[in-house]
Length: 146
Image (cartoon, rainbow, N blue to C red; front, side):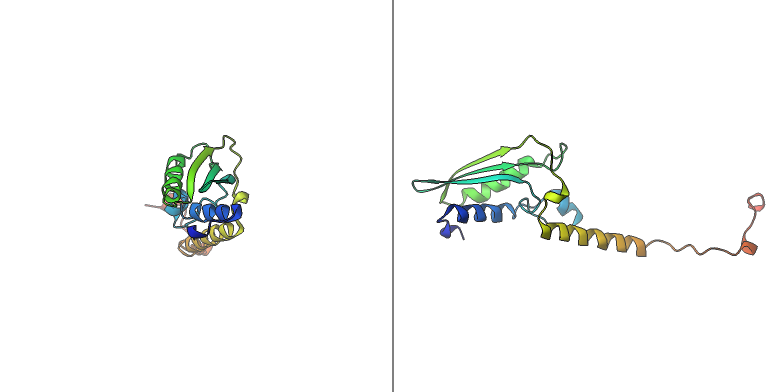
């Protein structure tokens, strides 16, 4: 795909696809693989044409102030984009606003997460011990317990 980086739109689509290869570690810990583009962590993405390639500028954000995976995200994106000869410059900036919500996720990612949560909830409900109510005649007063 990197051989077809002819237009700005091509570059933007390519960079988003590459960013989606970098999965959110918190989701992976749950068994849900969602890339950072689908997570809604790309605040802005700009591609500028250079003489022999492209300059890419990404502005990323985090899901919460306690997220320390920004180093991982940046490293993985850089490693993937540096392999593409047409991308000559990569700038990654971190947005200071902490306004991410699950609504920022792509619709497919929201569905994937919802399906996972429903599956976990169903499994938890089916694994709950059933407690049948005992008839009053079978109960023992507390003071008679051994």
